Length: 222
Image (cartoon, rainbow, N blue to C red; front, side):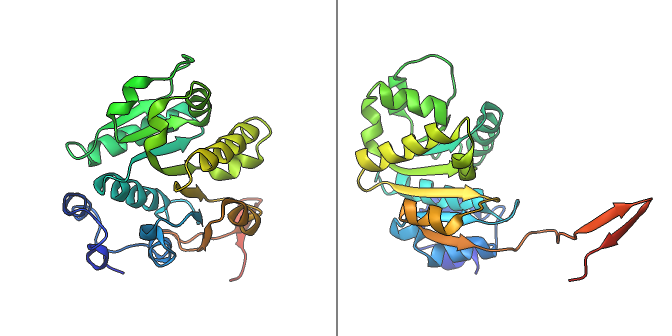
C-alpha cells in the first residue's frame, strides 16, 4: 500500500511532511489501516522491531490533532526513550503541532501542557497528572502506549494497568494504540483493551536463528 492511497485520512500538511521519507507502508501499517486505525478503533500492534509501529501511533495522533478531536499522549517506559521520541517528533512535525515532553520528578499537574497538542511522557508522570486531576486530560483523544508488554512487569506493570483503566473510564471515546515487539498473550490483551489485534512477522532485515559453538554457527533451517 502506497502512502498516497491513504491521503484522504491525513491532513495535507502531515502528508507533505511524511512524503519526504515514506513512499510505501510496511505490512503492519497496512494492516492497521484496514483494521480501523483512521476510524478511531483501538489497536494492539505486535510486530518485530523496526516494522513501523511508531508511525502507526503517529498516524492516529496527528489525525486526531489535525481534525481538532483532541490531544495525543505517547506513553513510554523510560525517560531516555521519552527524550528520543520527543526529538524525533519535534524534528518531523516542527511548525505543525505543539509537541511537549513531561518526565520531571515534580509531583504536579503541569497545567502548562494545556497549550500543547502532542505530549510524550512516562507512565509514572501520567499517573501523577491523573492524581492531580489535570484539567486538560479531558481533551485527550488518542493514547499511544509504547512497550505495552510491560503490563506484565512487576515494577511498572501495575501503574500502567491502572493508568489504562482510568483513562478508558475518564475518556469514553479515547483511542488506544498499544505497541510491542514481544507480547506473550496478545489475544487476551487485545480483548482487555477492546482492540483489534495486528500481528505480522515482517522486518526490514531478515532474522536468522542459529547456535554458535566453537567458532562456528549452525543456522536453523527455514
